[in-house]
Every structure is written in structure tokens, then in C-alpha cells.
Length: 609
Image (tube, rainbow, N blue to C red; front, side):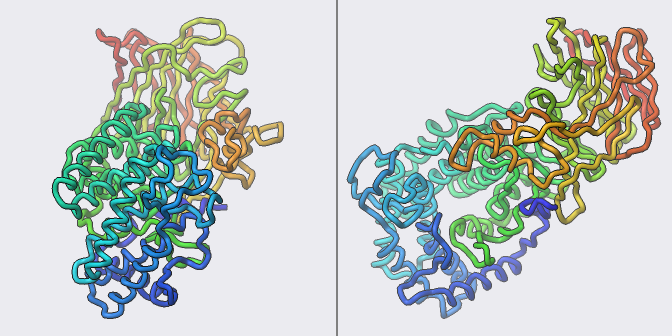
């Protein structure tokens, strides 16, 4: 079983002008064959996200005409534009829409579904999308659209902007991508308006970004992020927000968009595995965007000097939004337009700078959460997620059902590179049920092929073991596949366990259910969206790797040692001395300093092959 929305890295898609011309040529042929006598370009199966879709195809036809001057296109553009203006612009309030600030404003908006009152909650983002489609048509209108249609389209776009920013509450779904998209729409609309209205709309767009988006950023893993559906980051919508920030910077030149885009890009880079796998989010946890992410990942990957294009995308939407039969849907057409217009090329090499929340070398990577606990481990082509035991999730020592991974105090980190090795030492103060403060020192060392993890902690009572993750997916280069197999070696006894109980709150990696499906089943939201991040935290138990302590640990310590990427037995020895804990394996020797650290309390680590 594979994860259908996580196939090839996005930078594997050809992005030359010739490749984009081929994409547009296909869109043109589909559109001309679909165009109805009324000028409708919607996909026949389109029901939801419909209010902007025909206009989106119109914008792609306008861009194609700019590039090719295909004589068939001017008539199609004018007819389809007339259809949108005549049939898809609504000015009467949608019954049941809960977010109005002004009733019966008469301002135009786009509907998520066409039937009055059927699903009005989606009208705000649909209107943002319609505004973006409209300004893209306006950008290509010279010589293509007559003055009457152009003036009418400007008036509708102006009305969309006013409805979004005056008649309704701003960003009612707390969705950063939608909100930044609205700001982009205002910035692009401003260029088509006369002064002083141009300056007024531009100023209002920048004010909304500062006061309604930037001022409400959420902190995660050392970064400030635009909130997404009530959470800090969503791996589907986060990269879409990055694309909006790229476009905002392209059209406005305002440095705030570059600054915030680079911060979000570095965050994505840190949480993304070497192989491009990621999971987690308040709206989707495994559903990845595709072409909608390309602009932002490519634009900001070049700016921060890292290979963000390794992000795995939804191959169904490799170029543009499609329906089940593969036919083009215009819903995200504006992103394809901008992607084609932007000349930035992919940056394909990793950044060399050490990153607090990431360890990465060769084919090995570890993405750490805000507590510096591994969120995803990648080695040997396998991705490991945090396991769950007794309703506790993470990586770390476990004794009497208590997992030692939540810090009680400052978490300290030391990065070292030597002799082709890359290492990260994490020192974490933890308090157990006995209220005794202990220091969990976790050393991660990789040669780019395997990952060695050594965890040392003051002697624990009972019979402790190391909770070492859950094998979840594997990478064959072209696809991400589900797995429950682990290539892991250990000094102490190692076992792979599966939940003894059944039910939605016990996740067995051998099942066909995905992490996202399990998370949605545990979510509290009844609408079918839920919050998978919160839902997953309700998990009681999961498939788990458990390693016993090394048999000959120094006195006063419990030490655990595992190696990911190879199932062969791990040979290692440990000695405690004046300089600290010495760890010797077949690949390296490391000395982990005293828990007190250096003169500033920072952890000390030496490493050599």
C-alpha cells in the first residue's frame, strides 16, 4: 500500500518554458472542447469549490494567448469571461452565511457551492480565489478583452475585495493561506485602480497583513508561523502559504513578505526529511499539495539556499487541480499562472548550516519537535514516527508506563561535525512520577547512511526500556509506501511490539489504515475535517520499537543504544570518566560531557571516527 499523495519530489517536475507551454497547450485543448454555448468552462463534475473555477480556466487561456497568440483563444476568453460575470457573480446574501458584518451590502462574492444556503461557510475562500483569478485575467487583458468587459471585471474585482474586507469578518476560517491569498489579491488589484484608490487598497492590504496575520503568528520549533486552521502549521496548506508569501513579495517588493517567507521556508526545511516525507497538521496530516507549493518552495528555497523541492507532492495535482477523471479544474489556476511567470529555478543542494530542530546527512535525517524529541526519523529508506504507549507519545526511556521525554526546564543542544560524521547532542531535564529530576542525554550520530542513537539517563527504578519509534513508511524512490518493518540494531534486547487491544485508539502499523485516517477517527470535530494533530494525541498505544538497556552500563546510569538503517547486531561499549561518558562503536568514538555542561551550562561533545 502506498500513500497516493506523497510520490515524487516536486523538483522532479520539469519546469522549463517548453514544459509549461506543453501544460498550457493541454489546458487549451481541454477547455476548447469543454466550452459550452453559454461560455462555461467548469468541469462537468464540479460541485464544491465552483465559484471561481471557470474564471480560473479563463485566466489560463489568457496566459496561453499571451505566449502563443493562438487565434482560437480571444473568443473563448471573452465568452467565458461573460459567463462568469453574468452567471457566477452573486450580490444577494447567501442564506445562512454566519460571518457577515454588513447585511444586504450588494457587494459581489463567489459561492463555494451554487445552491443558496447549501454550504455557505466556504464563500470567503471562494471569493479570495475568484479575486485572484480576476486580477490574473486583468493582467493579461490588454489586446484580448474589450474595454466594456475590462471595466466590468475591474468593478467586480473591486467588489470582491470590499466584500472580503468590509462586508465580512476577515479570515473567518483562521486559515493563513486564505488570508495571505486575500492580501495578494488586494496588492494585485491595486495596480489596476486609479490613484488615490490604488494607494488606499495597497495600504489596506499591507495593514491587514500586519494586524490580522503577522500579529497572530504562532510559535513552533523556534519559528513564528502564520496560523493555519487554528494550528501552527499544516503540511498541505503551509507550503501554499509559502507560495502566497512568494507572490506577495514578487508583486509588492515589501521586505516583510521576504522575511516571513524565509522564516517559514527554514521551518519547512527543518521539519522535512531528507527524502521529502512530512506529516502533521490541524487540517490534513498526510495530504500534500503539489503545484500549489512549487512557487513558494522554489522561490524561497533559492533565497535560503536549501533544497525545499525535495518536498513530496500530490501527483494527482502535479500541474494543476484536476477531477477524478484527470480533467483540468480551474480552482487553483492562479498558482499555475504565477508559477509559469516566475523565473526562479530550483536550488537542489542542502544547506550546510546546522539547524537546531534537524539533523541531516546523506540519506539520514531526524526532524525534532519543539521539545527536541524526534518527530520523524529517516534511515535506510524507512520513516519512523513517534510511538505511543499508555497514552504517551515520543522517543525516550520508559519505566512503569512513564515516558521520559517532556522537559522540565531548558533543553540544550550541541551540534558537531568531524571526520565525515554529523552529530547532535540533546540534554533534557525530565521529572518522573517520583518527582526526581533526571537528565536525559540523547546523542544522534550519522555517517550519512546509518543513524546511531545513544540515550543516557541517571539510574531508573524498575525495568526501563527505550521507546524508539514506530516504523511507518518506506521510500522506494518513486513512492512512499506503508510498512511495519524496521532495520534497527541494538546493544540491548530489541523488540517490535504491536497493540494488544483493538479499536480506533490503538494503531497497528501492519494495518491498511493510514496515520491520517486514524487521526481523523480520533478527532473531536464532527465535520469530517477534525484536527488530526489533536486526534493523533488521543492514541493509547501503537506499534513500537522497544530496546532494553545495555547490559554493562557505567554505574549510576542507564544507557540505551540503537542503530537505524541496519538490522545487524550493534556492538558498542561505554565508559564513564572525568571527561564524561565515552561511547565507542564500529563507526565513531564520542565523549558526552557531564550533565552540568560547560561554564554556561551548554552540553559538551567531542567526536571522531
